[in-house]
Structure formats: structure tokens, C-alpha cells
Image (cartoon, rainbow, N blue to C red; front, side, top):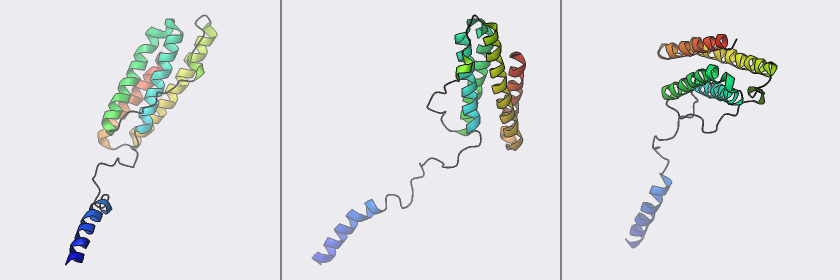
Length: 155
């Protein structure tokens, strides 16, 4: 009887620790990445590039700040749609996004680099729109159209 009681006590102590992960708690993050996560990163990258260029060349600020804000809004909406948090690490724009304010050639090169980045982003958003389920396609189409407009604004 004492042995049986001892086994019951030992069993009661072992079962809770052994069964911790037995049924799962359901609060683990979904290991499958959302296909829109790269678009969040791209939107944040584009926003950072435009902000860096506007900071480096104040004459471009009026032109680039609204584009940067649009990208930031796209990132926020995509983050909301995916139900995931935005990337924690800030995106660092490349050195080509920082012109010498006194040189028009540098400004042209920066605008060309931003146009190229916008075109790549537009294509990524377009492809995501084509591949997306209907409930996501409207937002993605809007983002692709905005990026096409940004390309034109950077000419």
C-alpha cells in the first residue's frame, strides 16, 4: 500500500512535466510564412529609400515624402492583413539613395535608382495580385497601381 502511494505521488509529479507539450497550447506562431510578408519588407525598404533621399537632398523632399508615406501606409495595411508584426529590424537604404545636393547628376542617378526600385516593387505587387485570393487582390492591385504612379512621379 505504501509502495502504491509512493508510485502515485511519483506519477503525479512526473505526468505534468512530461505532458507539457502533449496537447499543445495553440499559441505557437504559424510556421508557414504569409506570401505577402516580402511585400511588407519591400514597402518598408522603399519608404526608407525615399526618406533617405529626401533627407540628403531637401529639394527632393516635397516630391519624395508623399511617396515614402504611401509606402509606409502600404506596409501598415499589409501587416494588418497578414496578422503578423512588421519586421523588427529597420531597413537600411543603399548608398545610392543619398545624393550630393549640389550635383544634378547625382540627383538624376538617385531618381533613376528609386525608379528602378519602384519598378521592381510594382512587378512584385502585380505578381502577388495575380497569385492572391480575391479578398487580397484589391489591396495588392491598388499597391501595384500606386507603385506605377510613383515610377511616373520620379521621372
